[in-house]
Length: 182
Image (cartoon, rainbow, N blue to C red; front, side):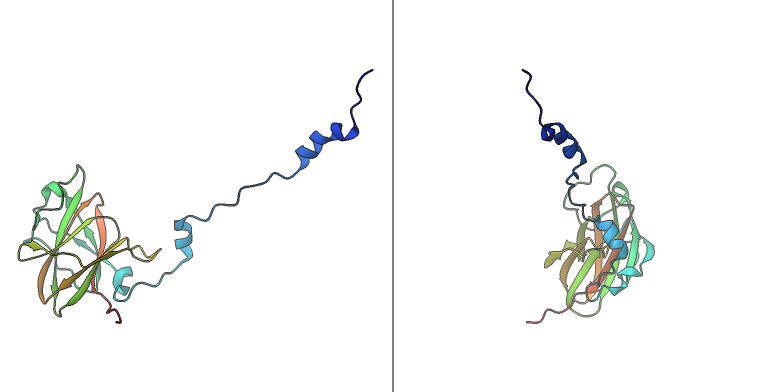
């Protein structure tokens, strides 16, 4: 005698085929998509970030342009081997890296922030010496500010030295950092 197949056994493959397939949750939109509709608040003092002017970085301190504190610039950098640094960079440049110099003037002592739109080494130089940073951070999401570094500066003229990047142009801004309430 042959075993009989039940109706359920015969229909089971059809039920399985017709059942909805469990789908993985939709991935979150990429940061670029979120940033297309988001307008982040810029940190205090960095509102000029969104109004940057093009500027060619210097290849020496003699050819370095002046960046006005509180105003953004898109610094066009040069191949690192063409740049005479104000101080020795933290490491030897890799093939294809760019660098550049700019000058800036501080009128009042305080904490000043250097904001960059891409990764790069930042040196603030005075009297032939690189100054130590007092703080490091990142800009707000979707702001275009990738890196922020603070320096304690007194009145005088400084050199901003950028190196260790492959960017041909680098968004940059120097601004007085907001005071932190005690």
